[in-house]
Image 1: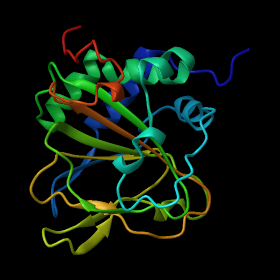
Image 2 (image 1 turned 180 degrees about the vertical axis):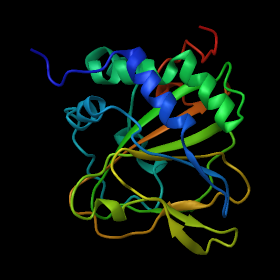
Image 3 (image 1 turned 90 degrees about the horizontal axis):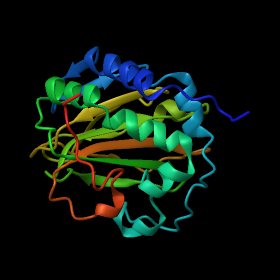
Length: 226
């Protein structure tokens, strides 16, 4: 018997598409789509039980790309080794999900590529206020944080002057989506992390994306055709 039992790709895709289409929109200081019940419980368990240890990083310097060798992406290798990664990536690549992203977020998804990062932050992690690059057609963060303080581990939001104005909810199995723009400042102010801050960052990226080793299907672009 394999553990955990995983949903079928089509069932996972349909569940996520429904969550996306039922999302609520926040407009200030920039547009964000807020999702709840993002994935079925079995998928969440599959991710949380992946035998991938959180990376030990002495000082992240407020960025992630300083330690690229310690980051975890759902690559072809991980898809081959772990059924959870394979099912998850196939669902995010599904034409119905791609259409939903394009229609809800009004982004040109056809011909882009799927990028999935599994993030496990330990105490001491922080991110300086920053804006995502335009090659990310959208940025989605899914919160899979557990523990008594997990709700406090959401993404910090700043105005155009980098002044802190609020924080996304880190409710378990919730998500936030935004599209990079001139005022989309966000980060993670340093605060105690008791346990592990687990997140998924999911992007569709422009075909010009240079770090092909980060892609789930580097030879298979996104399509909305069934």
